[in-house]
Amino acid sequence: MNVSKRHPEIHYQGRVLENFDAIIPRIGTSITFYGTAVVRQFEMMGVYSLNNEKSINRSRNKLVSMQLLAQHGIPMPRTGFADSPGDTEDLLDLVGGVPVVIKLTEGTQGMGVVLGETKKAAESVIEALRGLQATFLVQEYIEEANGADIRCFVVGNQVVASMKRHAKEGDFRSNLHRGGYAVAERISAEERKIAIQASQILGLDVAGVDLLRSKNGPLVLEVNSSPGLEGIEKSTGVDVASKMIDYLEQQASLKSESR
Image 1 (cartoon, rainbow, N blue to C red):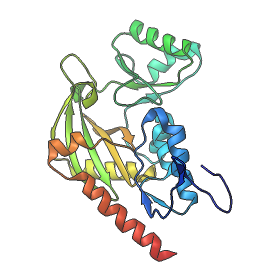
Image 2: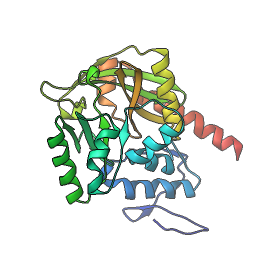
Image 3: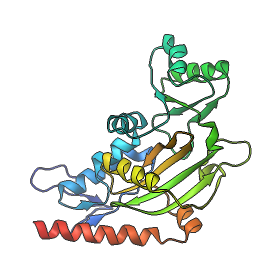
Image 4: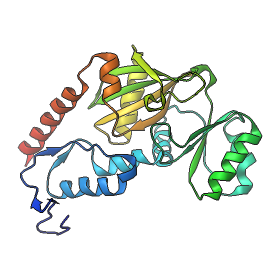
């Protein structure tokens, strides 16, 4: 990337990438820093991005995204964050005690997510993560969800597809990459509204919003800025990729007309 005020450029294999109207970011968690830098560079060149760099970075940090959602009144599992070893007992009490879910702030696809079923187990995991200087959250465990969550795929201001993901036997994580399975699921008007609001609060035009069904209503578990397509298209039969492209063309055209 040529970071220049007058003529910002992106080079690929020795040639300049030019004449792009729009891009669709699909950035793996391990390359978030570099991937979002590329998106930002395209934005400097006047190229429309389906999800902008700031929104992607917001969603990638679980602590930041949860704070923003909480600020706007989005229902979520009780969530705690602390840095001092002396805060462990208070941290567990904040979320209602064990069992608790402990998750890295920048994990994905169920990696870096552990269930602390007893106080001793939870304290051991927290101590180990602190020893690795990892940042993590502690959340209440929603037992009535029974290891299942709802993935709502949001494009623009619509939920274009939704599925229910079930954890494999013996696990509590419903991620398909961890061996779970999914089926198409009809969502309520409240779930639809919350999913759209969550994606808009983080500034995402495309998002996978994960909800838990609790005894107190739907709770937002996570908002993903690069949601997988294969699982939801296979389980629902909806051509989600085409809906993303249709929305991209519409927004890029509007941006071009406004220049």
